[in-house]
Image (cartoon, rainbow, N blue to C red; front, side):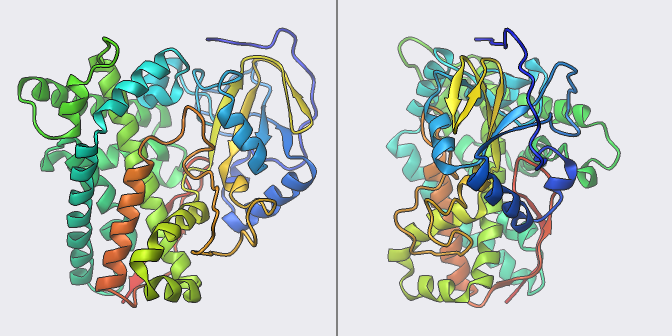
Length: 421
């Protein structure tokens, strides 16, 4: 469904500029100062188009920034009004890249409903158990490798990024020879806005090249699993059928791209942020260690809230709608700021503090509910439980050094972070 405003509405941009490169180059604490003001005074505010857009559009007048927890949840759960089919990223992305890289994340019903059902049908209890068993085995091996590397090693490179790619590989059966290239391609799809990563390369070219590579891997896997089905998720995907529908090759390839990006980067970032938080909040680390098995469930939810690995997603209004005291016009873009919603003091007591016993913890780290709630949330939780069981078991005194952050408005990314033990 395509929508556009009938009559452009002239609006004044908010004095706080959430669209600039400078804003997203500051620290999360600095950004929170701006978010706190917006939540308190202008929870839904109008902003200019994002700087350094992939596809500058002269007709793009800007977007509504949604910073309050209650409003983020309202937008998330009202998918009749707030559509995903015109893209979910802050920036404008070429239409041909949308579904090819974002799968049902960038779809609306009825296609979204059918494809998500097919994908969900492949996540059977048996698949979930198999995935969780492999996660525990991989976590133990990864922390053993980190210990062997010695104190001072880069935690991101040797630990945080390893569990997601090994989990993904086991889930879909990626050959070991392709694993790190798949991880690198997934990194590229969320790093195209990072000047350090690009190193002078054209961002659109980086996006297209790496997306094409992931499609090639997916199509080769699909062809093999049709001929030689196994016990992995990809075999289940290519044979899954719901109401007479099966995924096409292109739908499988698009879902693989989504799985590679969402399954790789978000868990990796949460793991890194969580170790830094446990280092900074020693009392919380001690509380968790006292009764790890009973307390890790609550702790994982707080890790996700505190890290908020995905900071923004957008929607497009299908019809006029009032939100947070503002009149949104059909066709206008609406951006949800999860990192602001997860620090909303109206919902979270002392949100700036890591509180592993926080309960209830209605964070929006996996989305604010509704049709697009994260399908892989249970896998992410399993990975976080497993990796911290091994870290605190094998390396009980492990501590994070100073992180090096990646500037950007999508993923709350840590480029590198030394660890000592």
